[in-house]
Image 1 (cartoon, rainbow, N blue to C red):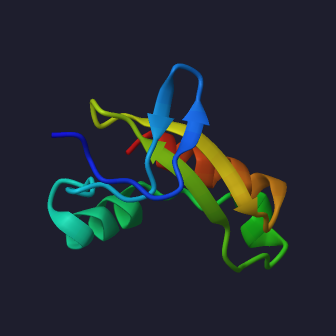
Image 2 (image 1 turned 60 degrees about the horizontal axis):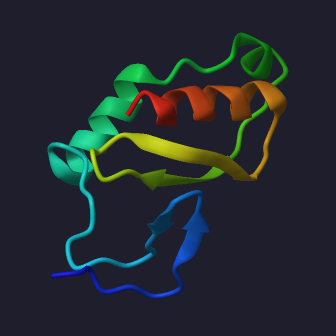
Length: 92
C-alpha cells in the first residue's frame, strides 16, 4: 500500500512526505537519539569562547533507506554552530 500523505513536497524524482503510515524512528527511539546526540555533539570552540548558546532549528528528510538528506538550517544561531548541527544530523 502507498503511504498516506499530507502536503507532499517535490524532491528531484521522488516525493517527500510529511506524514506517512509509519514514521521513521532512530534506532533505540527518542532515548537512542538523545544518547547519540549527546555522545557526538562537538560544541564549536569559537562559540564556547564567545559565550554563544541557543537553538539551531534544522529540517531534513529521512530517505527510504534510512539515510539523511536535504539538511537545511531553518533558524540559525551562529555559523560555527550551524555547521556542527549539519555535520551531526548528516552523521545520524
